[in-house]
Length: 97
Image 1: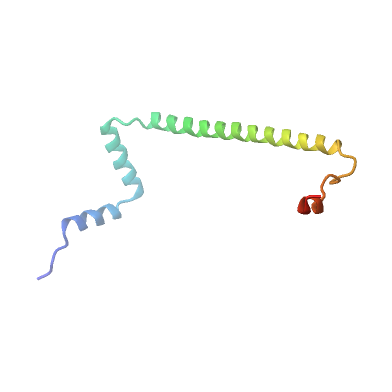
Image 2: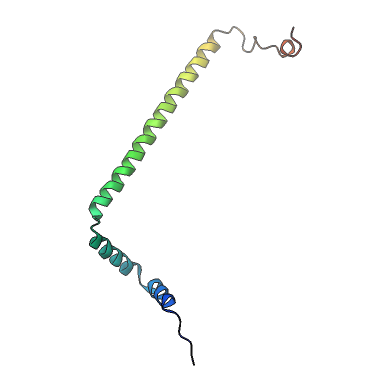
């Protein structure tokens, strides 16, 4: 006598065999019954993406400003030196001269 698969295996197999479109329809129906509004959910997702883009722009703008200020400070410090690297003496720093 042939053994029959358990019902949980049949359920899993039937879910795996339905098309993506039908699966999406079933999910939409189920969420509709729960009162989930797809348009509101899409608006929230779009607003979240815009907020992430704005935060990224703000952070990068601040980082570029700090970088520009640091470059300007280094350039000004370089203008005040007669000969580049003249204040560096490795022998004096090693032996305390």
